[in-house]
Image (cartoon, rainbow, N blue to C red; front, side):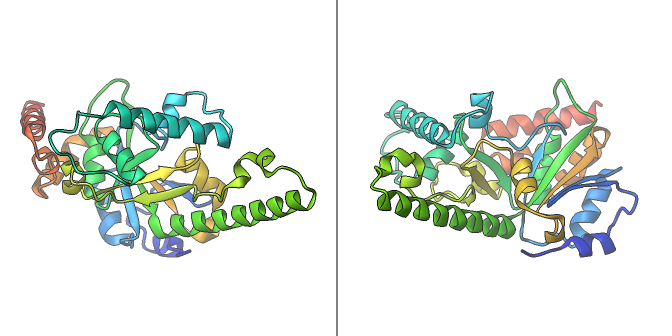
Length: 295
């Protein structure tokens, strides 16, 4: 894994920023919006990171499908079955609702991405390759309750891919050994449930090829797909060590910086008009800047 911790420690733009660590999961509390801008430009955060913004600092990186389950207490087999049945229902319900001559969708992940765009509870989380697009989504909405800080997450893509693949290989080695042991003892392999099949990587990145989501294109977006019902914070904390560097970073920025942030982003042409290529974008743009002008 690529470790960047030494760079951040030595070249920290806001030396007073408190840092909390939980293995490869770091939380950095900043005093100003400008401090975040400095981190992006001066903190040696490379292109390996993908970004996500959230309005409330206490919201976990949990998918809508996991929130739908609520208690989150399902076995791996139960979660797998629930997920597949949920997607099959969506495929059936979507018949005749995608317009005339819709493109054929063969990839399961493209079906999940289509559902995500239209409000389906999915195992996907939206990310962007732009830290400032993520900042826009962290600060654009207002609501109740509102926490003291907004949150912007940075996830080290190649590190996650390596970790997930290594864990998958280890699990498949274990499953193959268990299958061989069952064969030697003449036990029915069906009793082993999930070990009949090879494991899937627990956390993957998805860039859908479908043209049905123009917002994903304008927002430079992609998804993570979770194969477990754990938050990404929990998964990173359980599968990394501090020595491996900043695999997941959570930046906390005061809610009071909202207006300055949105004005700065607008000067970068990051606003509802550029990120929502439809009438919704026009409406959001007018509402936002009427609000700021009169604040």
